[in-house]
Image 1 (cartoon, rainbow, N blue to C red):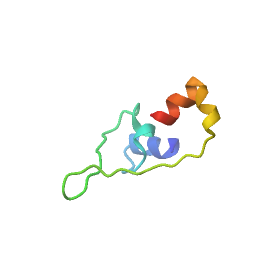
Image 2 (cartoon, helix red, strand yellow):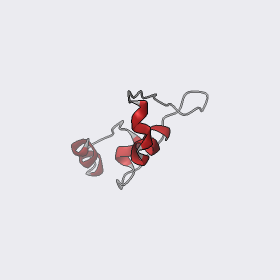
Image 3 (cartoon, rainbow, N blue to C red):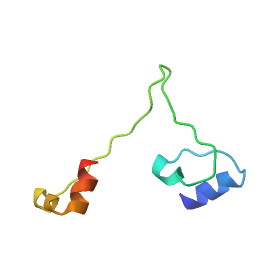
Image 4 (tube, one colour):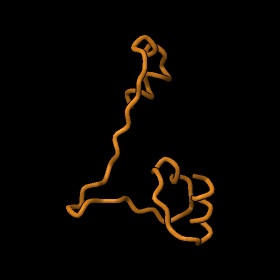
Length: 64
């Protein structure tokens, strides 16, 4: 991802990368949208043990 981001920053073209990767990059960003104007989103799944939710760091990550 970093190599791709650096190439785009240097003017070598375009890239479709996750928003979390491009937030601090000094590049033009455009959110992809459907033809009806709705943002294109991707669902992520995670497997975790319920017992681990007592740790604040894990709870904050899961609930986010």
